[in-house]
Amino acid sequence: MDETLLMIPGPTRVAPRVLKAMSENIVNHRSAIFGQILSETTQIMSDVFRTNNQSYLITGSGTAAMEAALVNILEKGDKVLNIVGGKFGQRFMQITEAHRGTSLPLEVEWGHAVNPDEVGFLLEEHDDIKAVTVVHNETSTGVVNPIQQLGKILRGYDALYVVDTVSSLGGDHVEVDDYGIDICVTGSQKCLAAPPGMAGITLSKDAWDVVNKTDSASYYLNLKKYRKSGDAEPPETPYTPSVSLMYAMHEALKVIVEEGLKNRVNRHKLAAEATRNGIKALNLELFPKEEVSSTTVTAVRMPEGVTDGEFRGTMRKKYRVELAGGQDHLKGNIFRIGHMGNITHRELITTFSAMEMTLRELGFEVEMGEGVAAIADTYLPEDL
Ligand SMILES: *Cc1c(COP(=O)(O)O)cnc(C)c1O
Image (cartoon, rainbow, N blue to C red; front, side, top):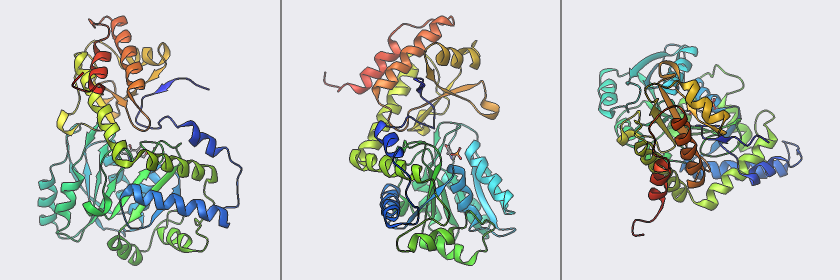
């Protein structure tokens, strides 16, 4: 078993009880026993999405649900407003184009959040926008976008509101019904802390009205088939799902219910705050502004005079702590600390002490223990 501590924005560490659930023997995926597991899992999935609508689980990574969201509502030439402020915002744009939609990209500087008013202006200007896509937590830049405010603006328009919560659901506030989200997608391997390979999706009535009128260009991701199978007795998936991963999702979602969604979000918020405090204590610089900084992943500028290979390489090889690098033009310029899923002060203290040793070895003036102290101070009650 690899003992490297994963501090990356997915996949995240999986609890032993979830791994154990996965080791149960395979059952017939078209049976009452599997139907029971599937219906419990999708029910909790809806609870975590905070929606009264049905949820569906797709065997595939988070991108499968992103693609399912668009391929079921788009026909050739349909206009989609894609908010693009990082790698995953870009992915929605590329999926739009792959399915012959017309993308209207709203480019946001990487490291910044979208200004909801700009979305409002574009919706006023173009009356034929069929959908708006946004990534709640832009994992590539460590930025959280204002999905609640966007939802308020979108209420005044017919465009469907499509939100990627792959790296936020279970780690930050997501209220699908309350925010007016029409299609919400997520993945198993981020804040939900299940192994990679399952994607979740939920659709509003308005979204289904569009899906019903759309000739889906996908066979595997045709959501009408997921709905039909899901409504069957016992409920099923249209094709053979990863039965083992369904056990894992079932157990991982039960863990979330036991912890309580609010407690879990608060735990993530505290981990993010501690991480930012630790970074500041080491005189490192956050990449996004603190106000828009993610609750689940912190992006930090690479300190001057050190390469990504030296820094993350030492962290990984010598201290067995895995951090994430930057993507595209941010490669080598930032590193990212994932604190999603099951992360607590234990993992953060280990990470920061390894970071202090690494930086010292690489020639930086680091006072040993300052980052760790900032983590501890964040977690300790103020009146001690
Ligand atoms: C991880 C991630 C995805 C999905 O990536 P997969 O590799 O397909 O699971 C999508 N959006 C965001 C914001 C992500 O962080």
